Amino acid sequence: MQKTIKHHNNYLTLTFFLMVAALINGCASGQLGKNNSGEFKNGMVVSAHPEASQVGVDILKKGGNAVDAAVAVQFALAVVYPNAGNIGGGGFMVYRSAAGETNALDFREKAAAAANRDMYLDAAGNPIVDKSLYGHLAAGVPGSVDGMVEAHKKYGKLSWAQVIQPAIDLAEKGFKITKRQAGELNGLHRNFMDFNPLGTAFVNLESTWKENDLLVQNELANTLKLIQQKGRDGFYGGSVADSIVAEMQRGKGLVTKEDLKNYHAVWRKPVVGQYRGYKIITMPPTSSGGIALIQLLQSVEPYPLKKWGHNADSTVQLIVEAERRVYADRATHLGDPDFYAVPQKQLLNAEYNKNRMANFNWAAATPSSSVLAGEIAGKEHEETTHFSIVDREGNAVSITTTLNGSYGSLVVVKGAGFLLNNEMDDFSVKPGAPNMYGLVGGEANAIAPNKRMLSSMTPSIVEKGGKLFMVVGTPGGSTIITSVFQTIINVIDFEMPMQAAVAAKKFHHQWLPDEVYVEKGALDSLAVKTLEAKGYKIVPRGAIGRVDAILKTKWGYYQGGADPRGDDKAIGY
Ligand code: GLY
Image (cartoon, rainbow, N blue to C red):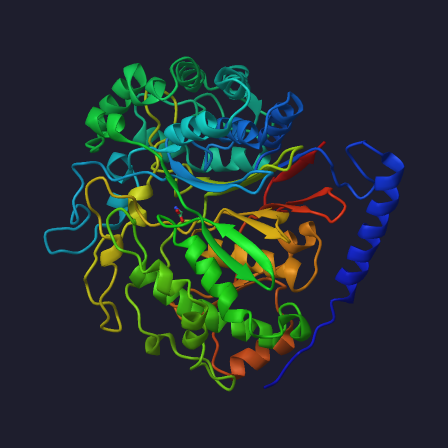
């Protein structure tokens, strides 16, 4: 076995320095919230948009808890980060109270009652690609508003009106768009015109969008006011439901008033696993992410990653082989647990995962064609968003939320001002068909009326010694699972501080296609040569993930990790 042992002394030195600084400053500053290392005592919010992070921290400062702040951030992101923040999509929340109670909320979208297994196939039985991706037919029944109502009802402390008000203000008064957002809105100008002939706030008819232009969304502000006044009925009933159904009728979509009335988020038992003495609390199905995360951790736990070093060739090879097997399992065995018996117990069994790794060979890559599983993965969109929140008491919330593609289906509900998701594309559009290796799969995730589509979103919380240790998650479609996994091992195995763990370059393998995707600078040239000589196909690619995470230090301070791949921001107090 050839190894490139990389030293991580830099991380150790930095960690030591931060610890000493925290200790000195912690003593010196008494109850003051911030120490000299930029760590905070009283709470923290890390999200994809500075305005949304600020909304969350303001709610904490008003005496709100982590769930109050999370609800406020979810609604704020629907205004200031419309490419993934949403009220027309869905998501997952993993919660841990300061006392150690854990819970998971599934507010994933559902297929409409009129949906059917073959709805995206042509007469010859072939998928019509754009049909599940763009326009009204791509949308599932939205889950975010009911999810936030449920979360707030169970755990919230401030009033419902208080936590929604900041989003209303941002929609009504407007917010300054970033350079990135101006570019996106200009790039989608034609598409927004085509899918929204009656007009939308995202179309600038007078000029092109520029950085710092004010985006005012009056229709969305009115919808948020109705949600503020009437709770779930302000969205799933009344004039907003009328607008959604009218929009569906205009564009031949399927969502009806009955679908809206019948939508309910579900509390589920989190998936829990152990890794090197840490407890991982993560999302159960309808997400594949939690199970796959625990499988990956169990697969690598017997090996000395720390000795080999971060992104050393042995580390990369082991992780790639684990990912190959775990993603193959995902394609076959995961789907909506209300419709399909996911073999959760077996997949989470440490012996099972150890055995899955037994046939890999250090001398050569295992071809994915020899790893039994189902349908080809790899079409998932990467434009979801994640936020992590902790409050003064130590309650923690990890939420990943999405419209699926960037700006979802591109349809803005006329009169209600919010984007509809294109989450139907996360179903297996053509299950049961043999793939290029003659294997059959995808039944677990076939389209059915009222079913939830499989997700990779992996909001997670880590405990150490029975206490809160980390809150973590990311967007990134199929790369979500590996990004969360690598962030966790960056901290636990490679002893990186939170920001370094988030910023560290990542790599990804997902069984099929049989390629290792590598961010620029993730591997040194010797590691690349060593892996290529063993038969691994190394493919450079752009950003992998956009992790937003929080670490609790042993002195009780919160360290933020805001991903530099986006405009993300950690704000503490
Ligand atoms: N739409 C991305 C996911 O749910 O994984």
